[in-house]
Image (cartoon, rainbow, N blue to C red; front, side, top):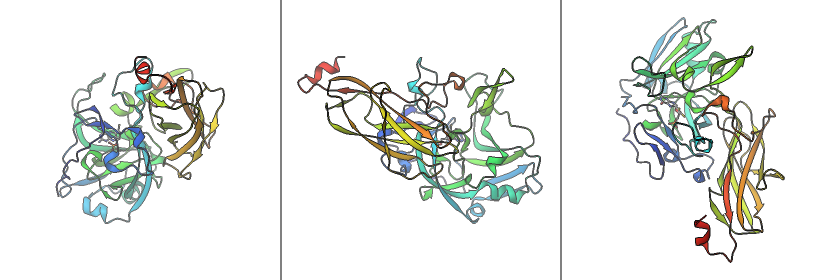
Length: 371
Ligand code: MTE
């Protein structure tokens, strides 16, 4: 059982060729489930070639009955299927001013898929996770040496610690299928974690070990990368990124799209949040003086995105306009107007400006190009 042949990914935007970091144009976000071939790929190292016939998933650490199981044994356990969105923590980095280091993701390092697997809680219960375990470390089989400082002393495998309470939640899956088919190699074949409600870095691909620990895990992608500055008793402290922030993105109009004046135009997008639901979307094109409510196309379904539309009348006067949309979540959180620098180049969830041109029907289109 070798890994499926790597799919070509026509139309995905290459942010890095190897390891593969590919983004989907966000105007593709027109279906509730993102087709697998249109789902972004974010990998820190080359995708490993895992042989499912030789595969073992090891469950150990702070447990009373450590065990390992084969791919077939995992697939023989009672399955669960859930729709969940993944958003890379660096999605929308290209909107940061000044420009930040790292892959220049625009709007498309996000997708909404259906995942099938076994709840992580079933595996932890079977292993008898001890009361003093505070986190569960999920480890992938991909290895390498990160390039960013501080560079670890040697190659390390991709690993993330998940708080015990979240690890035991029924939505967290050890998945082997995406949209009804075996995971493609770039998305973690044969087995990956899916942690709905957390940024994508928590959903460890090519998963080989589930390790319960008694001390919070301080690995590279927990402290150096995918971390932010919080405050504790007045002191800045580093914390691991976890829950998704409320966010909506505009799929239509596209950046720099030319629009006809004084026409009803359907603004379209998708919105999501972490451990809560998105309850409202508003759109403005006049710098926030007036906000117009959008309508949802999808019902609220925790951990999935909600697509929305807004019938907007374009301005009568030709010129450059900025369209903004902002989402509100059931817990009262609203997308902010600007990025919080404590998060560095991650968790970019402020209302993102989409500049458009309203054309003067009498104007030579070449004149706008020259602006
Ligand atoms: N798991 C492993 N083993 N190695 C990785 O590099 N990247 C993480 C996560 N899981 C990663 C990983 C990040 S940063 C994201 S955003 C998601 O996988 C992306 O999942 P996808 O490539 O299936 O979209």
